[in-house]
Image (tube, rainbow, N blue to C red; front, side):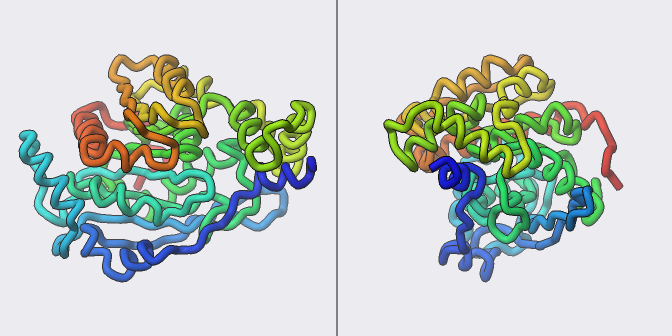
Length: 325
């Protein structure tokens, strides 16, 4: 049971592309963006092969097709008094991290709204997900350095002038990784985190119980976590985004559904309260569960997130030129 449980813990399900993803890949302008794919090679040391991460830069389309969600968001922003760039013009980049067992293409519906305001979107398959290499997910222990490498490579490929100011976006696991990275990643001037967990052990306990048995003894769930950590070479109990939150100096918006039973609503609130910035934002979503929080918030939530990012464009530049060109 311990070994099987550890497999469930650190080896996420790899999902294939779905018809909705394939449609956007084949006709991106119909969704308001253009796609440029690239590969990140991250050295791992110890004589092991480098980790390969598959990434893409989504840019606002200069000649969009139907782009219904993008056009609807542009209308909302215009009606709220925002000045919008011409179609195809960028003014910053959102670095987007998906959730556990997600793939970078899951970000397409979110990106449709972000490009409406002129933001490019940098997306990538996390390690052990999608088309990227690696077998194990470490919930941030290794993924933080993966994020640094993705930003390094993007800046080398496209240049700082093209990408503009960088801001972060993460959902679920991606939110937890973003929080852990922010104290060490001065190139991100702000972030929106959706449904983040405060610390890993309680979330792992809940997940193991759901997969194996709700009546699973605590010592067995501890064994599962220990075995998973040993196999993936990390210490699960050290994964505590709430500790990272207390060290973040940039504005962060925390979004959480009040009906989330996967990652409790209180986790999101605790993260928010730990953030020291006076410009932080708390955005609860009434009726939002873990897997539908963005859909439940719909255009109103997307507009709130976009406007949060727009506010940060007038803020101070990033504190480092690390990896810049």
